[in-house]
Length: 357
Image (cartoon, rainbow, N blue to C red; front, side):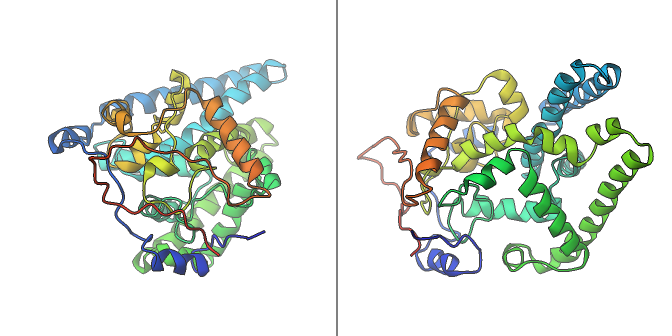
């Protein structure tokens, strides 16, 4: 069985650059410039509304947890609170990393840093990591955020549903960064002028997490431990992980067409609120500067040019699990998502299914 090298400094990285897959030109649906300009216009209103609802729900469920403490209802309340803490913060982190959620920069930064703390993710590191993810989406040896490594590591994915590898990995990197060191992979995408900021931010985050744990221990309070810090993040990350897997896992690697390595999924209104419309993932990757609240409109303009939309989260997740299970023993397998054929259209991009040797 051939093992892929997903590091950013090894043979796969060299292969990607040799094949023209690094920082390449990607296919884009033809949308009139005036229309795209209108879609890209930023506004504070939708994000202020959605953030206020999110924070109000967090406070409400935290209060309900306190009131119901010691009863069976507390378990259900914590389940809901943890989803708002561990999953909703992930989508807010994501959209604010693009700087498109709010028009006002300080609002965007405030929510970004708050969400980064909640989801246990280093804001400086992941801002640059995510920029690379969009430049070289699912290009092996270039994309630091590929979740569906082949062959599939089943145990790791099971543990990730409760946040264990992510949390442990972040804590290790925080300690490393607080000590002034970056990994070889991190050095490949974090500019040298940003490295000192990474180290300072890591030290602040370590202090904040230590403070959260210290307060819970000092007051001997499980309630404090469950509403702030690692435990609610780990308790609510499972749905964010499911959403994350449906974005790209099981699809083609090393292609230059987002229609082949991203999924667009129709979701119910609750999931769309939790996920901030990232279910329109082909649209988001093809035009990442379009704010989340405009993605449904962008979808209407693009859907004729894309593969069939998944009808539900379950239908997409079922395909992901099936493909990843097969990839345990057959890493060459992937789900082929062929875009509509238009013989008159000259797609100025290279689609390559070559895999690393």
